[in-house]
Structure formats: structure tokens, C-alpha cells
Amino acid sequence: MSSSESSLCANNCGFYGSPENSNLCSKCYLHFVKQHISLPQPDHDIKVIDDSITSSVDQVSNDKVVDDSSLGKNKSSRCLCCKKKIGLLGFACRCGGKFCSMHRYPEEHSCPFDYKTTGRVALARDNPLVVRDRLGERV
Image (cartoon, rainbow, N blue to C red; front, side, top):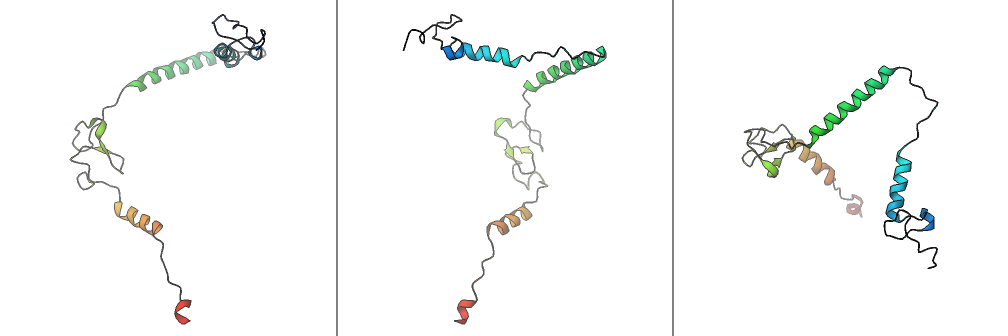
């Protein structure tokens, strides 16, 4: 390595920079690129025609921020039949519900999912009809 390649970072972070990265280390260079690329420069040719448009855009953006804060709450899961808390270990059914250990079977919670036709379709798909060659009998 020559002395030009072993120069310290231009931000004085203590790491070595490289000439390809404007004498910045890898972390400082990524931070530099993110700052300059992520902030688009506004066009000076665009003029605001109506101030009511900008105020309505501000209101919409404020509503989105409020909606995002409500996503952090944990929803307690309960059995669809007896409303008993099932916590993390609830049994999911093919009908889309979660049930406790007493109502996990389809007969116990009057499941609307049709297991019979689903099973028949799966068997027909997985087990094709096997027919013996008839030419072998004639010879």
C-alpha cells in the first residue's frame, strides 16, 4: 500500500478512507450517498396554483401518521366459540378461525369448511387411475 491509499477518512472518524469514495470510509461514504440521493431537489418550474391543495395534502399525511401508531397494539386472540383466551397456542382451523383445545375439532365448532370434497379432490389429483395395457393379454 502506498501512502496515498492509506489516508484517514475525511470525516475524521478514525477509519481509513479510499480515493474511490472521496477519501471517506465505507460507513461515511454510505451516509454521504444516502443524504445526497434520498433528498430529491425540487423543480423550480413547478408553481403552486391553489393553496387548498397543499393544505389537503398536509391533512392526509397527518391522518396516515395517526393510523400507523394504532398498529403497535397487540390483539388478544380468543376462541370463536367460547371466547376463552387462547394466547399463543390457539388452534387454527381451515375455516379461518382460532379455537381453544375444547373446540379445535371441526365437529365441536360446527365448521363450515367442507373436508369431504377437499379430500376427494386431493385423492383424485394425487392418485391417477392406473389402467393395465390390454395388448399384453392378446399376445
